[in-house]
Image 1 (cartoon, rainbow, N blue to C red):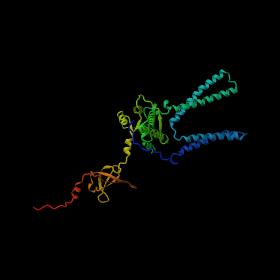
Image 2: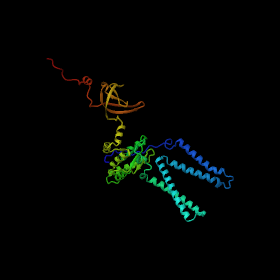
Image 3: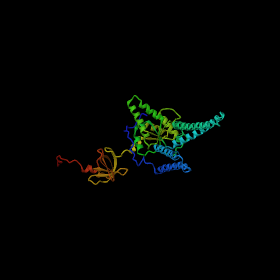
Image 4: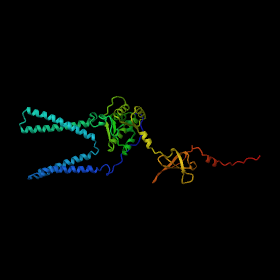
Length: 391
């Protein structure tokens, strides 16, 4: 990863307004209100069925207060995790199911032990056995959820497009290499909202950034730290769907080889600024997105001082001016080009003005442009010497 793109300043994502990111959808708000109302209604059913209230605190207030507390905790947890992923939900669900099955098996074992010790007839002993089974079940469910969430890279339960599906449905994920993270332009591009494909950063890329940040070379050290900072910036952006995965390749080698092997095996795309990596990947028929190509496409086609080839279509409003148009329809006014209508000339861009009707560009004929026949015939230098002698 020797070739690194131009160093761009790290920019933070634009602040979101209260009406955009912070405001939940109306349907989701309605579901939360319905959930709270149903929970309070369910808690009120036992109270309504009481024939006589002996203790209002324990019979009425405490059940409803406990229900309201549970509703508040659940809604707050929902609000604190606005960017939920279906993969995490599925992983937690599978972990809870596995924990319940494990607790059921352990509960049967505990019942057998209790029968062997002949404690089933003791009411207090049965209560402790039930409490033990409940504690074991909750512990097993917690351990299962913790294991699934912390080792999802190995279990492949929450990234089905990597392990189980050879054909990617929807948008193909993008693999980010070291040079793309160091470049920094990807942060600005993702902040615009144009990029909605999931991004994947393999652990080998983070390891390479870590090695660069610890390098004795100051330039490499700055690049490594910049790459880690850009990665952290994208992780904190709620609009970016980014995962750090411990992807395993069937072959071993440097980071570039591993990325190409992963992209070929999992049908992924590589995002890079390394021209050599892009060329080798194209030879291997791997899709590569080069940020340099994107920057060249999005570059302003009319920068002051740039020379463009333009066909003069008509005369301008002022004397001597000619008018041409860029391929996107932008008008270009060229000085001293009225006599070159219908011809293609080299024009030096001198200025660009944004008006209510669009952008207007001004330029002048390049000095290297050859003189026209009309100009050569009408603008001959005047002869000031003596005239020809008569014979």
